[in-house]
Length: 125
Image (cartoon, rainbow, N blue to C red; front, side, top):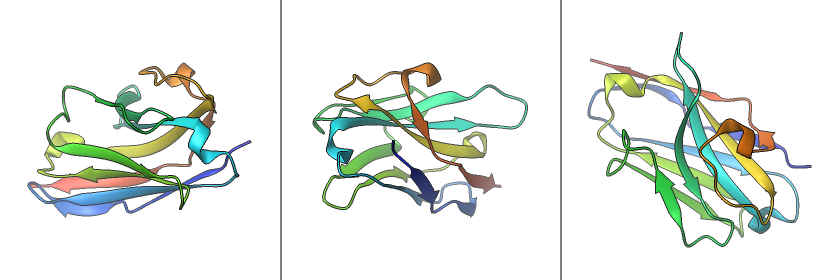
């Protein structure tokens, strides 16, 4: 069982940067592939970024590619999402998620077994 707690959300202006962090419990953090998802009001949850359990491979939604960077620190049991050049359409609740051990990255919510409670990111003009 993995418990995930996100932090770092807030209110920023368009063009600003924000860094989200997700702290995980457990001693096998390095074996989990991790992802960030987001859900805007009235919209379905969507994949944002993922990082392989081995750490070397990352993947991004087209809408954030080149602006967002996912990274992990296995020594600190954390996964982060650096968000640059934020746009109004990035406004959403952001969730981190973890797979079962040694699982591939997925772009569907059903690919992940553990979820955080979410953190709100609001981008204003």
